[in-house]
Length: 191
Image 1 (cartoon, rainbow, N blue to C red):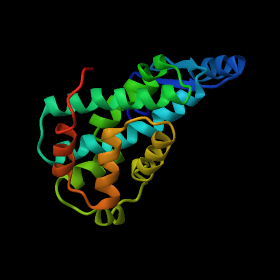
Image 2 (tube, helix red, strand yellow):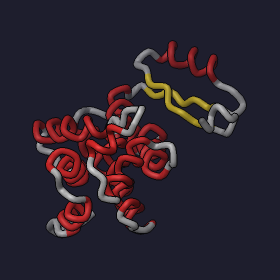
Image 3 (cartoon, rainbow, N blue to C red):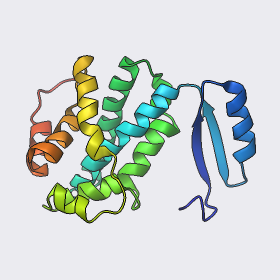
C-alpha cells in the first residue's frame, strides 16, 4: 500500500541466478522503489515465513496492553530465534540481519496492515482463534506456519521458545498471558 502511494520502499529480490536477478532489479527499480538482490533464496524464504509467527506474538503483546520495552525485547529475541533456525538449515546470517529478516520482521511486528499482528492483537484481547479467523477475508500465514517451524526445529534440535508459545496459544488453547509468563520464567542464560 505504501509502495503504491509512491513512498520510498526497499525490497529483496532473491534468486540463485545472478543475471536474472540483475535484470529484474534493473527493470523494476524506480525512484521510490529500490530492489536489493540476494542469492540466499533459502534465507529469504525462511525469514519470510518465520517473521509471521513472531508478529502474532508481537500483536498478542499489544493486545495485552504491554509497552514498547516488551515489543523491542520480543522483536530482538524473535530475530535471534529466526537466525538460529535459518542458519542451522543453511541460510546465511547476514540475510537475517537484512531487509528480508530484520526489516520485514520489524514491519510485520509493528505495521498496522500486518494480518499476523492483527491476529495476535485479537488473541491478546481474549478472542478465540476460530472467531478471529472466521472474520478475516485474508490469510494470516503465521497461524499455519508455527507448527511447521516447530517440526523443523525439533528435527534440527533448535530451541524456538517464542514460536513454541505462539503455537501453544494457537493450537492448544494457552492464554497469551500464560505464554509470556512461561517465556519469562525460562532458565536464565547469556545472550
